[in-house]
Image 1: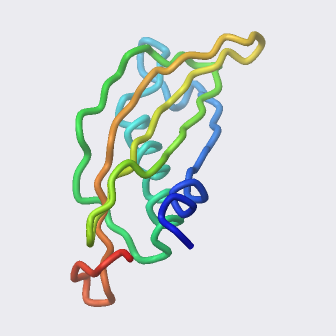
Image 2: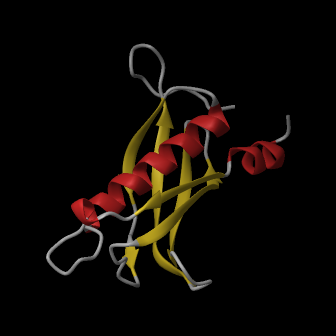
Length: 127
C-alpha cells in the first residue's frame, strides 16, 4: 500500500462528551485532560499508520484557542503530517460542538512525534 493511502487510512476521529468530572473550577475541560485525549488520538493514528509499536517522544506547541465547556461534545481528529525513517508526526485538532445546536469550532491543536520501537525498545524503520 502506498504512503498516501496509508496516511488516509490512518486518519483517526474520536468523539467524547465533556462531563463535569473532567472540568476545572471555570467549568471548562482541564488542559491536561485535553492533552491526554490528544496523545491517545495521536497514538492510535501513529499505530494505525505503522502497525508497529510506537511511543510518544515529544509534543510540539499545543494551542488552546477556545475553552471547552462542560456539556459539549469534542471531536478529536488525528492525521500524519510528517514521515521520517523511524519517526512520524501526528497533528491532532479538537473541535468543540454544542450538543443542541450546529455550533462547531476548533478549540485546540497540537502535534505529537512518535518513534517506532522493537522488542528491546530501540528505534526501528517505519516503512
